[in-house]
Image 1 (cartoon, rainbow, N blue to C red):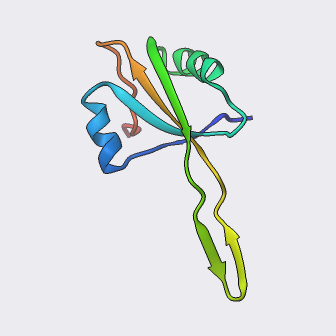
Image 2: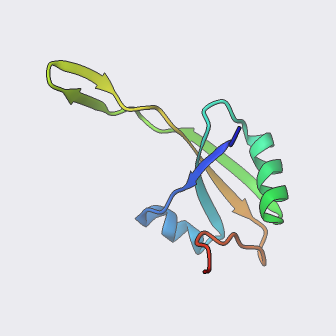
Length: 91
C-alpha cells in the first residue's frame, strides 16, 4: 500500500522549499517514524524532522445532501542541508 499520496505544492509549501522542507499528503494511518524511514529509503536522503497535522474537513453539498470532503493528513519533512527531493520528473 502506498503511504504517500502526492507532494503538495502551494504558496506556503513553495516558501518552505527554501528551508529544505517538503510537504506530502499521506495516508491517515501512517505515523512519523514510518514516514521518515520510507522517505529516507525511497529518495536516498537524510531526514532531520517530520511534522504532521490533519487538515480540517470541509463541508460539501450536492443537492439536498450535505457531506464532508475526505479527511487528509499532511506531513512536512525537513531534510539535512545538501539533500533535496526532485518533485518533478525530468523527461
